[in-house]
Length: 72
Image 1 (cartoon, rainbow, N blue to C red):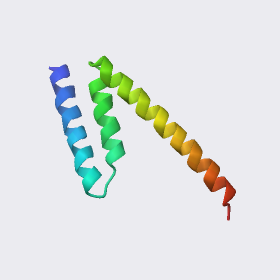
Image 2: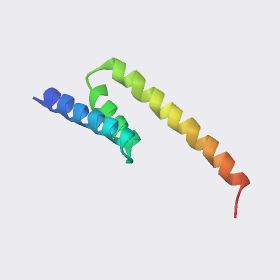
Image 3: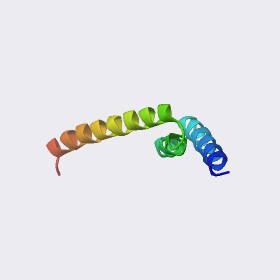
């Protein structure tokens, strides 16, 4: 029952992420939430989740460096 609930909620989060990729909204948050739900039972989703976390960490570090040069 718990596995089915996690799969349904993961699917809903991924679909919301796709919707908000077209319509302005927090698509990354929904994609990561969907991957988090799927990663509990699917090892391949864990790899995608780790890749997303690393990519977001790198992009935040890049933005921090760029914004530090332009302090006000």
